[in-house]
Image (tube, rainbow, N blue to C red; front, side, top):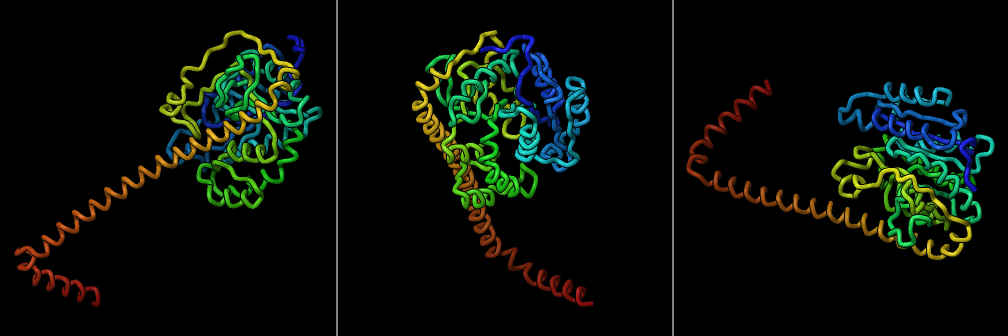
Length: 358
């Protein structure tokens, strides 16, 4: 059943913004332009601080005040929280979870970031998927980004394992069941998020039986979810667009390499899927999740293998340089000019030693 134009999106919405006015403008405008209404009293916007952030460390301008003004322009009647010091993505989303799931009638909540633009029917698509997910205890997270590691072989009106954590709705029961482990992860981040100690994080989580493929929030949450036998699904239809070419985990080169420049614009298509259709492919979805985890593991292994190869090449170059310097040094020591000036260098050293004692 679709929501009508007169109806309001029924779930609370949390939005994480940071030091990017251009992205914030696009995302908030896209949220305010949905084809169903958003209740501003059920929207919480947190704007992370500039101080101690990666942007500060690399010398980017502080534009947080501009982001605040943009948030007030689009959602003046919502709760807007500004941090003085940078908290990082993981801590900010943890804060938003605790806030949103305290709202009445919040069996699900929607979480947005400043770098994913919603097409006008995005909230309608989320409502469709949530209604389907309510029939399955395994399904605890849904999005309509169309971002999956699995080819959309079943067409657009189907569901696939979620490949990203963008613009997603989370089930409250999963928030509750994973909170003790996720809190341990949050507490283990004792520095800025971008400086987090991945080894400490891994050691901490492994004591709880969780083995993430990375130390970032998304990999940790995926590992917890897989450990609990839960599923995160995305739509076959792409109902939004990733715009974060420059961000915490992306550079323009990586953005283009991963094909995000080619993501489709809004087509106006509606998304349709029923519980019966999902039930028929539930076993297939579970196998696809395992396949997607395997693909992620291969990608992580390839990344670190590339890093190790690069490091090994640098070590070889340094050894070659050391060998060359050692050879040059031996030639210099054995040279006639070195022997002739040895006495003078000895006298100079003795004079300097005398001055230091004086």
